[in-house]
Length: 250
Image 1 (tube, one colour):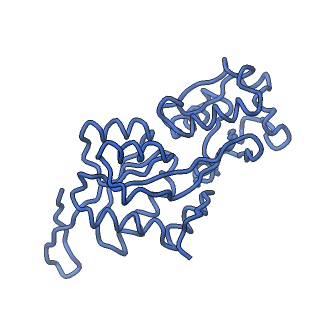
Image 2 (spheres, helix red, strand yellow; image 1 turned 30 degrees about the vertical axis):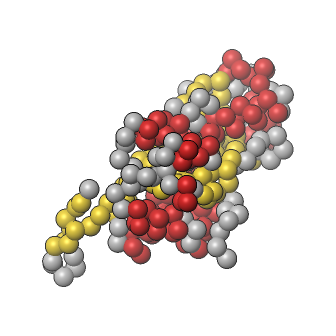
């Protein structure tokens, strides 16, 4: 896809567009990263967010994405094995964490209750992403099992298509607690209306993986974007949203 833009000099110039499909947990951080990449590289970045499983299915059905940033490693590995992703550009880019999140006006004392909040009678619904196609939903279910809470709260669970929808359930009042990524809890709009409790004992971390897709229109630009994900600018943004970046460049 090519866009015509007006340069500062007034001349017309063609600018390529890089389409990046990304897991919903990345929305706050990746919007900032893409803006920085555009300023430094000149390539416009179009972002498409959703659950990793649904995005993978779209790619398998021919969706014209150039880069895929998954919430786990298994989906990009699957695309590589199917020949739809370039294995040499398969990499881990961040490690995410889970938190419990409530609205500030809910009058739920999350700091005092911690994970016991899930058993409170006032908590009628608990929102998580659908584990069928959302890695953070898988992690949420693993946490509940590890904490011996699964059977006790199973009837309270409501499933969002992705983590963004799970968070929206809590914001709208359709659930009282969300088991969501720390990265979403640290988004400015979420900080404004809610508070979180970090899960460190029973919750698994989530290793997030990326790949350049085989049908990328501009593989060089796609590779540059993945390289930029390891830059000091991008790493600083990821860390500000609570991700660990163990393979960042020094």
